[in-house]
Amino acid sequence: MKIYSLITISLLFLLLTSCAIGPLVGHETARTVGDSKHELVGGYGSGGLALKWNYGLSKNFDFGAQMESYSMGIRAKYAFINASEGFSLAAAIGTGLSVGGSHSYGDILASVKNGNWEPYATLRMVHVKTDPVDFKDESTGRFDFKVDSLNYNYGQFILGTRYWFSPKWLLSVEGSTLFSASSGLSLANTLLLGAAFGYRF
Image (tube, rainbow, N blue to C red; front, side, top):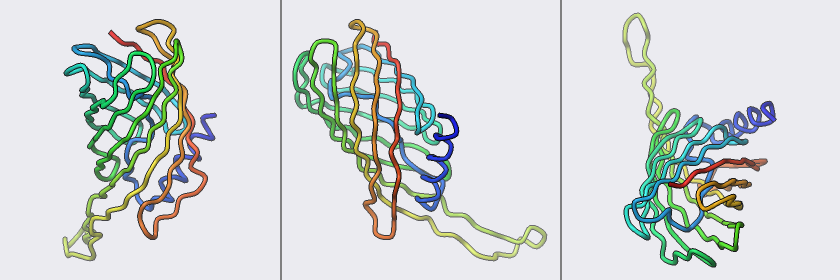
């Protein structure tokens, strides 16, 4: 599993032609965590390690932070439909730093809570900007050439489910795939699988 994960991530970076990439995991439903409540989720998978924290600023609005193997950032989520049981719908935006650049993204999330199970789906669009690099001669400092900042876009479709052991403890499993949203950017074999445990308090 570890070798498969390393190969997948390495190929992913090569396909994106730079080291910068946005978040690769979701492990989140459309429901918010609740007013003044916290949620911690940590997991591992093809996208590497992931740790998420969300805090309910109000009944329908969450603020959070996310750290993964190749990126970190902050995000906000607003639930348009926020059902304790049944269908929920939300939108989220996020921004942060990646290895070699920065990213911003938007999510549309839908989920259905049915007893202990809560399947979810997320459509994510990501904009990545890589840092410009100047290459100079070490001895003279003379300018040789410059790589301008590069921008590209890609999307991600995530399907997963949470299983609630109790109102506080959860297990999340998901799979996702990436797709190109920029001309000249080609993605293939980008199936990502992962699992995570979470605690809400």
